[in-house]
Amino acid sequence: VDVLVHVVVEVVLVVLIEVEVVVVVVLVKVEVVHG
Image 1 (cartoon, helix red, strand yellow):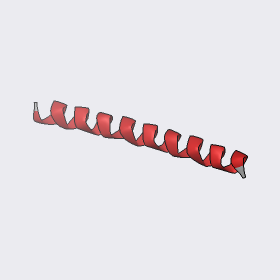
Image 2 (image 1 turned 90 degrees about the vertical axis):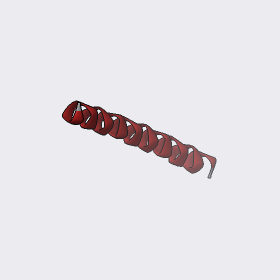
Image 3 (image 1 turned 180 degrees about the vertical axis):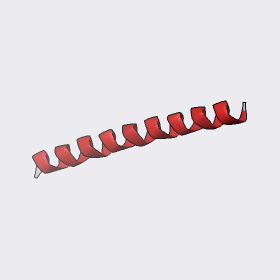
């Protein structure tokens, strides 16, 4: 059970990091387009 929880936590962290990167890239592109 502990191993599953650990895996789920790692997956969630990776997804959050990927989402954060995507958001930053989108914001930069928007700034470049409007800038």
